[in-house]
Length: 313
Image 1 (cartoon, rainbow, N blue to C red):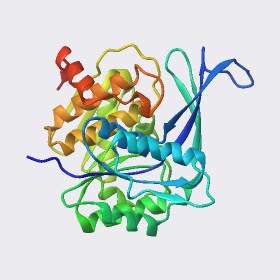
Image 2 (cartoon, rainbow, N blue to C red; image 1 turned 180 degrees about the vertical axis):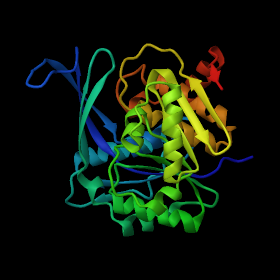
Image 3 (tube, one colour; image 1 turned 30 degrees about the vertical axis):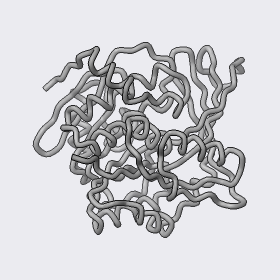
Image 4 (cartoon, helix red, strand yellow; image 1 turned 180 degrees about the horizontal axis):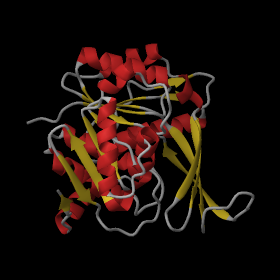
């Protein structure tokens, strides 16, 4: 059976990273090492899927600057289809300042640049690349009116929609929430959406119930080193994460989302799809950078074969 088509909608940024011994306190100056990496939530997710052997389409907006060319090259080299991407004359590509401590923790500030000018009409035009029986992934870094239009189109086209609500912002319509098939927040985002503090699987279950009340068909909450919790109207389960040595948590959520979407496109059973996504996220945090940290299908298969993962009913 062939894979289902896959398309991502989202942001692309040049990550300007400082590796520091620890994250600074307010008003404190620290010495650090500077690196630059291709990033952006949507782009990272698309690359994660491509590294697993998929050929996803991706819609984003880039400036016609050096950063935009670097970002486009990274996507192309990873195997992402870039024919839906708009390179915009006279605009500046998005960028992010990322501080990464030796313990893998990070602080991120984003200048969206060309990403901020996505309009509903632009998104509607890009939906011509959505193929029949497709899975579509969207993240909340996009302008909210553009997201609302994509979710409206979902009701007409009938594709399956995975929504990563990051960063959480107000304005998504009630009807849009009801178009979502899978909503995939992390602990912080789940709290911002539900006001339930997610610290373990028990509290994740409470948050998931409130997320389902918003309208999505299913909720999939990531809990970092603990694992992930899934719930829909019929079933719920929790899977523990793979234990690894954390180097950099940047893009771990993107790795999870891209891998979950890829696994669903590959028609894996739900639990196997979540397990594979956890494996991809685990490997991601063992390397520095965003897209550069996304593992290959071979590396993921080796991890899956070498370790078992505990499911908690």
